[in-house]
Length: 405
Image (cartoon, rainbow, N blue to C red; front, side, top):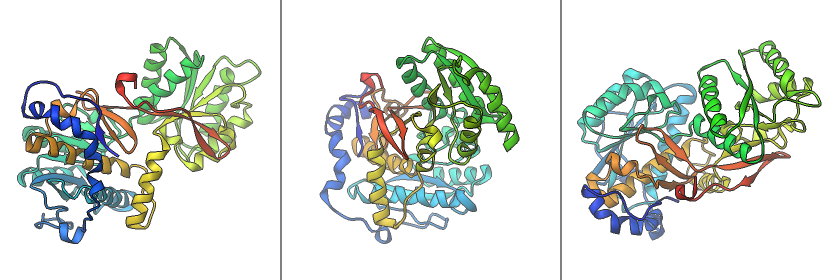
């Protein structure tokens, strides 16, 4: 499901003059699928783009879809899933006046640069993708010179800028949401166990800022290198403030995923740090059934979208392609649905910075989101709690940024 959230856009420009009526029917744009018409990829192929994939759809407005289609390993499989999700979205809006032009970035900056140049030369009005931060950096100068906005999938806020908007889930958003919620629940003293890498540095900066904004204090931040001994030593250091009968910290942030958490939770248990003493806090990486099955995290809180949207998306995707998609496939689906909605309202003038940074935002599979003028995004996330192998909603996601989301 997808829609605009506001009732009118800002004044000025072609899109704004049409917004009063266009946005009033925005809810129906979600259900352009309700007409029940189908879409066949074979009949939707357009002219050859010079890549392995042909264009998808027959609309008059071209949208570049930059993905590492021929990259090896997980990158290539993720690219295929993102393309599938884009195709699925377009299949549900058969009246959309857009045509997706898949272009292979090969998973490299050079490949992304060539793909962007090809997209610009072919007359695209918007680019969806690429996937990796280095690719986004390579694409940005080309698209900005051509005044073509980008909806990228990287989660590195450093590559965002005006005209280059990130649709991904950002670590900064996760930290802000979970810290502000924990503070409202009475947590005032925070500790964190973070990896010694770029992600850990981003989380650390976001934690310091969010805790200060919430009126709390950071008791300690412990960083660890990869390896069992390094993690064990870090947990031992954390135990000095988060262990024992009277811990100095009210909450401990552990923003890792299923690959690392089994070892960390075992070390925490051995160090006598448990969720009965301090509140464990996670990130979006906890939104994984493998994490929920870790007994040591029972009672832990983490931010994430309402699971209902994801479950509905899984059913649609599996019904079409026979497999469960990777979690980030919803990003491509929402990007295409957004492009179709903006094209419906504004035509070729529908992809302006003013329109994309609408402060009331949009609603997609994973709930509400909005783009900031600096290219980052905000999302309305729920707070979930790990409970016996599952996750239950502790606080629902907001349905409006006006309501404080």
